[in-house]
Image (cartoon, rainbow, N blue to C red; front, side, top):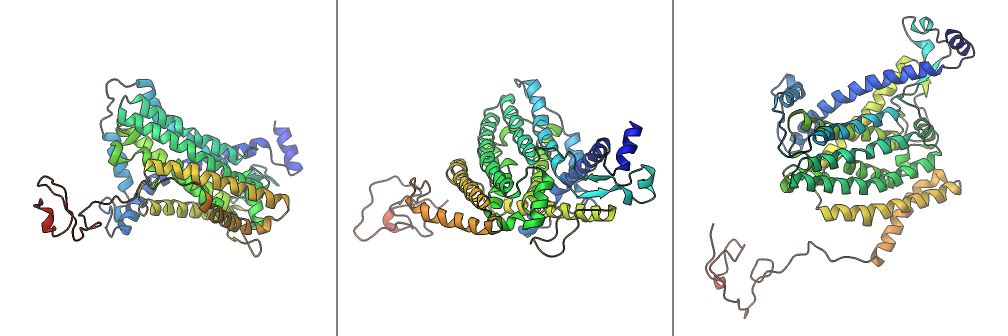
Length: 444
């Protein structure tokens, strides 16, 4: 084995074991970074929501409230671990793990930086390991199926949601699990189709292949803005973030599929949501924001793809910065847009986003076949034009939110000669000053 490693080093090829060791190191580092990021993402959301609502937010625990995540973690650990009677104990305990593990598996195919030349390591480490000419990719697993692996692992989270709702032996939890399953399965379709549009543009399913394509032709958010909007919307739906948090819907379902969970079991559901959000934001940065690239256009200076440790740290900071911005944007969406009704949510997926994503893939395939990839932004504009041209001819359902006229209300006031049928003396007006002709009204 030592002889084979030295032979590979002599010809300048990186041994597989060296790349595997670098991948394990990346996984260990980024796992702890993302877990810490989950804790402080909760603090960021509380601070951001307070700023948007003109409040102060958490500021008591530690300087500027920076130790609040530690207090929240201790609170979860010290809470009583309660198991309701009648639950399926095995599945009840397994469900939080089944939703947490897929979220923790997906990030391994995300390149957090470019290629590191081991010979440039400081303190003589490059000479110590004999890595003259060895180069490693800063990615957990550079597998040939690439980004398809992340999409496949993310879709497994639906099993934890469905089992958590079913095993709880609660109608509220079961209904929440069913709604979450239908939502997550529905929004996986347009997410996969928008990802397919990116793969067609890049001509590769490997993460580094997608990054190289964006270095040559510009960030895909400029070429495929419609696919980017579809993908980000589906990402919010997959992670059960507002306005797609019908799985929880506190006003209707008490707490959804995790109603019966407490202590660290509930914390795992909560942690999985933020882990999904961070991984999804990093995935969005990879697909549409050029990853660790700084230049969004295909000309001008950009960070080199490979280099020493200093360059790798800069690339890593750029990637984390883009991920943090997309996470913060999702939080701003949560505190801006109200929750959808469930029928509206399903209609948006099946009658809106799925046909639109199919159109985007079709137009992308035509442009790629004709060799017009640099003009794909015109194809995105064409998709919008086609939608607005076809929309008036599409069948429409009656508006479920139409206002029903109430005779005598301020929206439908009485006219001269109108007579009201006899009615009991109850609150029959929502006007500030009731019409005397309406009879006595309640003043509660």
